Length: 119
Image 1 (tube, rainbow, N blue to C red):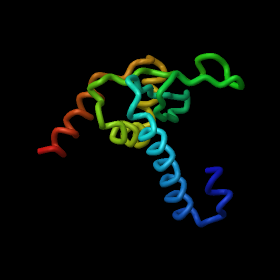
Image 2 (cartoon, helix red, strand yellow):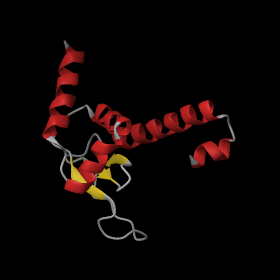
Image 3 (cartoon, one colour):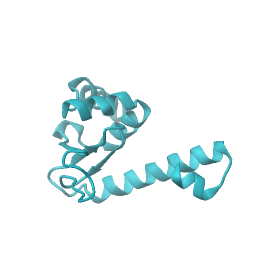
Image 4 (cartoon, helix red, strand yellow):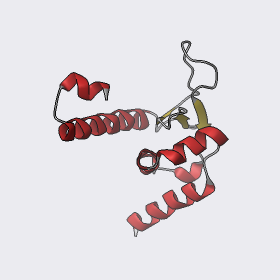
């Protein structure tokens, strides 16, 4: 929303621009970390999420405000699918934040989606 206010565009353009900027930001973070052996899903209490190569820490936040959860190897190259799914359904991201665990059903769905695109 901050980006959209800065741009001063109409609501439809604002939403598209904000979503595009968020996806590009996530894509940059995700692609820059593909060489890492462990990739973390960082989740905030509001459901905001992104990936990174190390545990997230910020001096200006309380400890464990953002939770860093190691992504299982089954996610593989489906990081974009995972992030899009979490963006579309924030309640899943909030559940991940509350339990500090990625639901097995979500991992299975992401793997099925990958199998469907490779066939």
